[in-house]
Length: 80
Image 1: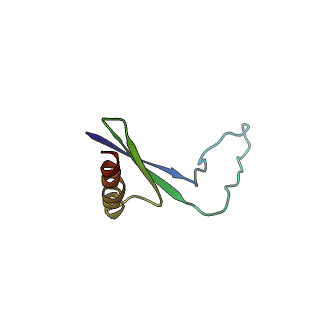
Image 2: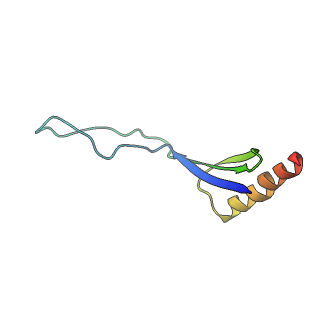
Image 3: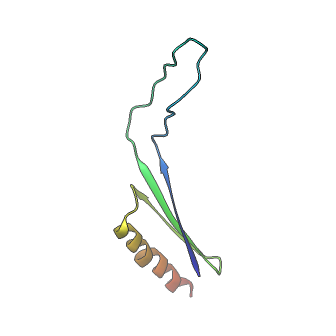
């Protein structure tokens, strides 16, 4: 049995709301730069072994199939 999971981290986590003293307008600046997404795909087998992969960007069918083919199946072959 294998449990799969996917998670992502983004660099554009800028707050959309804030607090200011009553009657004053809130002014804040967001950092300029490169908005990036890093996706992590990982698995845990019933025997406790794990296999993970990180990519820049979002996961799609091709990335998931590559993870299964190149990481998950290769990890199984080397561990038993």
